Image (cartoon, rainbow, N blue to C red; front, top):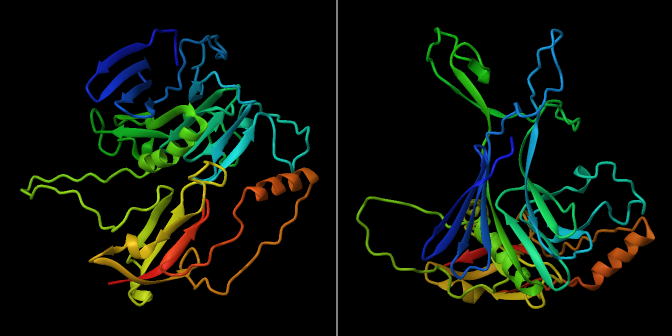
Length: 390
C-alpha cells in the first residue's frame, strides 16, 4: 500500500497468548494471536483511512501547461491466506450463516451453460461470506471465520481471500450511480469565520478535514483434518458472532457464582435461538421459544445427525419450568398443525436434476412430528414454539 517498504513487526509473548503485530503502512496493519490450548489462530486486521492520492506513482494525466494532475486512485484491500492444499479450484462459502455452498473457479451451477464465459476473472469469482469460507483436499481443511459480512474468493488453488475494505474514485456501474468513497469529516472552528465550518461533510473554509473510513475485524483460522475442523467451526462461529455481554460497576456486589437457568445442557449441535416474552401479551402469556440445528446434512459424521431435545429436562428449574408447548410456523404467526405445504419444483436441465438427486440422497426429508416434551431437529432445521412456563 504505497512505496516499497519493510513491514514493522513486534512480537509479544505471555502466559496466555503470543501476539505478532505487523504494520505495513500508516493505514494497513494486522495482529496475529495464538492463544494457549486454542485450536485456532486469530487475525485482527485494520485498514484505513485509505488514501486516494498516490504520489509514488508517475502521473497519468497533465494540465494543458504540463503540470501533473493529482494521482487519485481508488484501492481495494484484501487479506489473503495461502495453504498447500490441492482443492481442485473449489471452495465453500456459507449461505447467510447456514449451509455451505460449493463454489468453483470460473464456473457456475448446472443451470448455466457448461462453457459459460466469466468475463470478470476477479469479480466473477467473488461470493458473499457472512460467517465462514473453507476449502479442503479431502483429508485436511482450511476454514476462515469472519465476524462481519465480506466478499471472498479463491483465485488460486489452495488460497482464500477476503475484501476487507475499499475506497474507489469511480462508479462501478452496479446501480448506486456514485463512487464508493465514504469519508468521515472532523470539523471545528479553528481559523473559521462564523457560518463557514464546512457543513454537510464538505471541506470548506472552516477547518474540516475529511478522511476515508477505518475498518477493523477479526478472522479465526482453523487448519486440521476435515472432521475436526467441521466440528469446531460452527461452535467458534457462534462465539465469534455472539460473544458474552460484558458489564462493569463500581458498586459493591456479592461474589459471583456461576449458574445456569437450564436444568440440562442442550446437545452440542443444537442452539437456543430465541426465548422471549416480547409477544406474551398476544399469546396468553406464552413465551416464544425457538431452537435450531447448527450443522448441515453431511457436514460431520455425528454432529450432522438429527438431535432430540427433551424440553421438560432442559427447562426444569424453578422460575423457568416448562409445562406445555405447541409448535407454530417459524414466525409464530399461526399454529403449524394441519399445514403441510409442499413446494412443487422441477429442474431446468439434466445436470441440475442430477445435482438435486444427489442432494436428496443425503438429506433428511421426513419431519419428526412434535410430541411434547420431545422435539427432534434435522440438520439446519429451525423450529418455533409457544411455551407455557410455571
